[in-house]
Length: 239
Image (cartoon, rainbow, N blue to C red; front, side, top):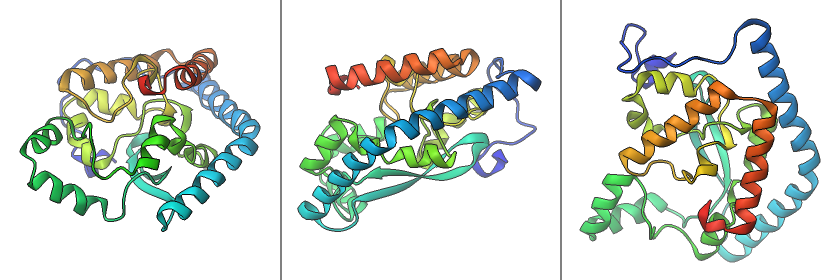
């Protein structure tokens, strides 16, 4: 299944393959306990989340028009592609806006080539910045959790465009995809929220992801969820 993303069964991993989640009964416990925890929390949070998302979507339609939601393909469990939902935070024709901006701004081009993101991204609207700063744009992903595409906690799913960066660590790539991707994760509560930063930062983020996969427990998930909420309420910029 990894051939679609440049990984081949006979290709040797450049790093030691780390321990995976348990097999047999232990694996069943992990799978069902984690999925059950997700569904219980989603059920309790759904009324409030639906109200917040509805109000934010209405504000987006009134302020900017168009669809208030954005769907992007991400790589999930066992390397499968799924559509991850967010509240829209960018202008229409965002890619054309980005291409034009990078063509006329060499410093921004260098920053984009290095990090695949911009500190001052011209595509993001003022209301979109508010949604991102407060992480409200991520709330529609509870639908992905309900569907089973994602978990509340796990390695953040990376975009297909970023796959090559993860491909360079074959064992890391495969291990990260042994669990469902998450809305938040062990790496995110340690400050690694962005998709890809400097190479060293990405390597550290992957190490946090692998540590989570190896040591998962319901208690750890609850700890990460509570820590995520605390960071968002205390200092949204830090998350």
